[in-house]
Amino acid sequence: MRRASDFFDRNAKWLFPLPAILAIVVLIVGPALANLLISLQDWFIGLPPKFVGLQNFSDALGDRRFWNGVKNTFYFTGVAVPLQLVLGLGIALLFNREFPGKGIVRTIILLPMVATPVAIALIWALMFNPSLGVLNYFLESLGLPRSLWVADITLAIPSLVLVDIWQWTPMVALILLAALQGVPTEYYEAARIDGANALQALRYITLPSIRSAIVVALILRTVDALKTFDIIYVITGGGPGTASETLNVFAFKTGFEFFRAGYAASLLIFLMLLVLGVAIVLNLVRQGRR
Amino acid sequence: MSLAAPARTDNSVARRRLGKIAIYVLMAIVLIIMLFPFYWMILTSLRSQVDNTSPVPVWFFQPTLENFRNVISENDFIRYTWNSFVIATLSTGLGLVLGLPAAYSIARYKQNGLALAILMARLTPYITYLVPWFLAFRSLGLIDTYFALTMTHLIVGMPLIIWIMISFFEDVPVDLEEAAYIDGASKLGTFIKVVLPLSAPGTVAAAILAFIFSWNQFLFSLVLSGPNTRPVPVAVFNFISYGQIDFGGLGAAAVLITLPVVLLTLLIQRWIVSGLTMGAVKG
Image (tube, rainbow over all chains, first blue to last red; front, side):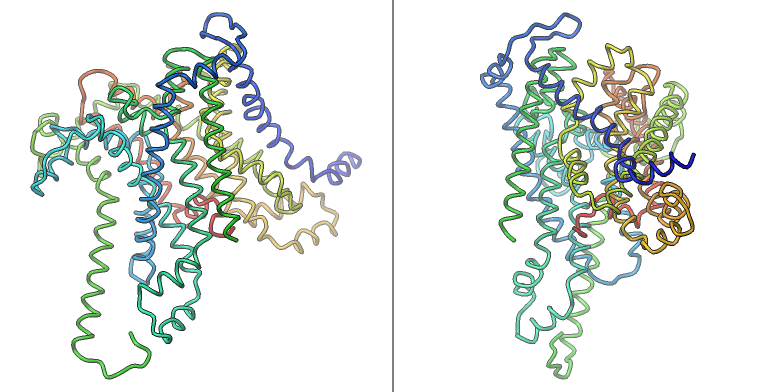
């Protein structure tokens, strides 16, 4: 008995994380490698695979729907993330003060993020309904024309961006709020003594102080936005047509509705490269600023 | 607000008060926007089909529980909720068993490389693994089993648990552990009897967060579940795939799914912030 626990103690450094590492290797690293192999096959699920080398990859590069997916992915993320950052900063600044009911407010702010995305997506789909939805009712009451929202090819992605903003701006706000609360008040007082107004204080004191938090929020949200699936699939299914079909929705359909596993695997590898590429670029930006 | 305080005029006091009111109004607007879809969800679930399909939204009406009754009785809803509960509990439990020791090890032995690897796992799109997972589980006959769903939910929850718990374990004073070693305790024993109880609040928060993430999971469940193991988000999604939209039923289903998550959030709202932001502000 003594020997066993001694052995454990001496090697605790490896034995403690070992089960977790095994889980990650089996469930992530293994499948990632398998994905590479699968992408080299022409594989219709249910039929035997056939090795075709890089055919899937060149097919993808020539596939208009692939590029449509890439475009939509960047469009969605490129609009959603900056807006979230700006709004999140505004909300953080707004709530960066003492007021009654802080706990309740924090809970309310958390709700959009933690609520089950599918349920949220369904409610938004109801609200988007052109004839019966409440959003058009609000537009009309303000004297604005009704909108087709997600039924309109050009409005599909912007409408989805709206949902994403509603859902995730709170996270940005919370990250930035925590950072704001770490800024020493002496900085602001010093600025005021020097005669700075509120806007100048914001630009020269606040923003630089929370710069690292802003970058972190930027990276987290960008990567997550690139991966968005639930709300898109549930609200529009990639439609109308392929107007809101991002790359991952396209890959999903290819694999699980068209059952072309090999082609889907290659699309997913492109997606992985896309996300990693963006993450690396953003990380370089982060390090560059130090 | 000037430091060179001159005598306050009525004007500046009034302006300050106006500014304060404006801020509170803005705050209220933000909060109303965040709450509105939930409000609409509840409203829809309590309205009759007639009221729900009225071209002008019906704000005041006779509430009915019929939608809830329909959803629960006609659609195996209780079964789906149970599935979600089982999968979330199993994957969270497993996530704790695997994740807590790993987090402890990273915290104590400063294994930053491992921490980075786990962060990378969070960054990659999970859908990338779905095709190999599907093919592998399918060939093993494990589609529509709790096993497949638990494993895949584990991969979502475990990194989260590890990431949160690293900070908590770092906060446990090493002296306490040293004292235990001097008394002859083993590393494992010390971990279980000294470190874990001290970081219980963090463990609870991490566990609840992992539970919520599993509950909310849609993508994996969509592909890997079947009639026997279908969790509730997938079941609800099927609601709208069938032609005529039962607005009230949708609302009721949405309420039933979201309610557990909201309640859990109320319990741990203080810690969710650091969990969701993944220690972003600390780092």
